[in-house]
Length: 229
Image (tube, rainbow, N blue to C red; front, side, top):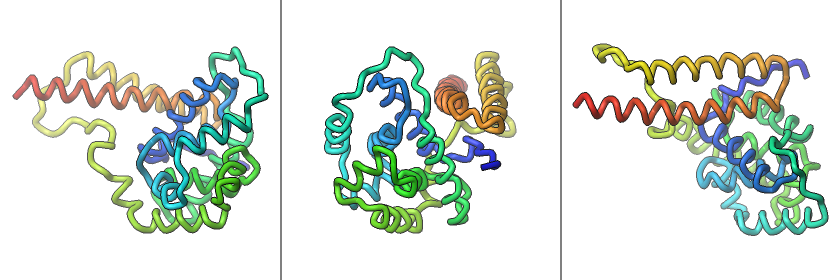
């Protein structure tokens, strides 16, 4: 497909899911980020439309993890330090963007990622869900219900947003905060180019770095503003 998939369009929870998926892949030492790691990331997040949909379907992290480990028991571990997203994961991301557009959403939510897993249908995550009774039709119905319920409220939840920009009347920010802003801006710039080049592996790594910098910037601003009061 010719579309570009800008990772900044993911909601905060969507980005967090991708970060958790990468961590799951690193812990599994398989050398790749697979659909099963996306599913574990959605469950590990503990919130969001996908998590609620999975809970409604009686799908829990422990059962999923056990099922995945059984399915992959004979697969060899990899010494690769940096896991690479599989073709199926790239397709899941594409579908998530397509579903977000179809539903008229401003951001790509965790529910759209779960829809992607269900629609793609052939990855380990989809097979595990089917084994646990969560067919694609059931998954789609639950996710759409959850997204209709509160996608707007979820995507603007206080405390999950990136650090605010400077308010009028604030004194100039100290050098270390300005440096963090510049680094975050640079990462976002490079990430846009990675997405345009359809380099999903690089974009995922940059998305993880963007998330880390957003948190670091938020903490630094909080400490600085408290020091002014």
